[in-house]
Length: 442
Image 1: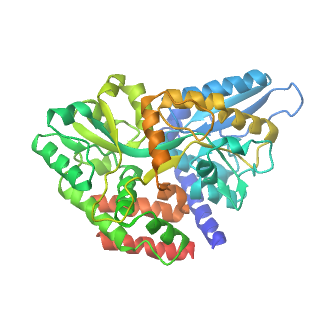
Image 2 (image 1 turned 90 degrees about the vertical axis):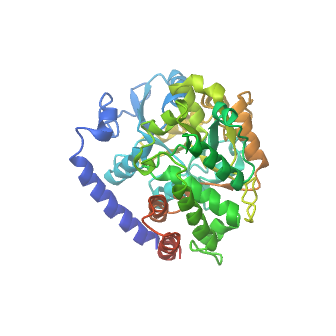
């Protein structure tokens, strides 16, 4: 089955490469024009004291990028003959760029990911360096985060951040309309109705890249059926992706669409452009279900909104069997090394610097996101809220599209997107996922 998946992926890679070849005058390439084609491996000398270049790719702008640049500067100071070519690629384009680079044999020396099934595909293809026997203090990492990039008891990536997914809301709008943080899903529906009556978009959603809407399917399925629904379907333990909880979750999503809970045209709104966030900043929308990265974006884009910003977890569904303390979260960034790097020792030292306590403390302080590194001090009020969510969680669900094999993960995003667009029924979406799961997972 793995070989078949690899052939399919390689075919897709070839198609993408051909497609990108005609698009290099704009689009993604425009982001990297100043750096040039840093993905191409330049000739590098191996001699002591001679100049060495290391190519590093990531997808985090703003404060997080600043933290990485500070870590890189510390690394370069310790290694004065080394230059790190840092390349920022927008989140929504990043996966495609890495796939293309891996297929073309010009992968960056160091790259970041979300771990899970996406990274595992590259591991299975022999593209990622095994870090298991290296000089790394694995005890310094949070176990659940390190496990996300560990396959067959071998470590292939070092995690830095843990991003939880929750609702951010405008406290001023809630106070103006006499609303309180919802404890149950029925409370949330009441809030939606009140806001609609007062010409406020209840929930901002920028679902063009598909992953923001997928958070709803994850949470609704969990609250309706519990954390074992996904695990049973993924591990093929007697359950499937056509479980009734998935069908019900689709029905709940389409009910939200019918209630006009979201801004108009939400399925066509890109996330990276910031249009959805602007609805929050301007008071046009009252809530947004999104990652902890929203704190970083607020501080970078519209810091005056922070004093109005509150947080609450996805509410309980009283008729469901899921534990309301369960949370969805992603491990990101996870730093890995290309198997083909010409500088294995230097790249190892680089990713160790990128996951050091000093880097983790800066990441926590500047980005408003918990870290996967032990030994840091939590002072940021938002980080404390997110950390409490992690510590109090009965279960943590990582994103489906990052946990499942890419072929199935992409279908999950596609079918969920279609649920929001009401172009498929909940039954059709669930059945499509289960058919593909039988092909890919069994």
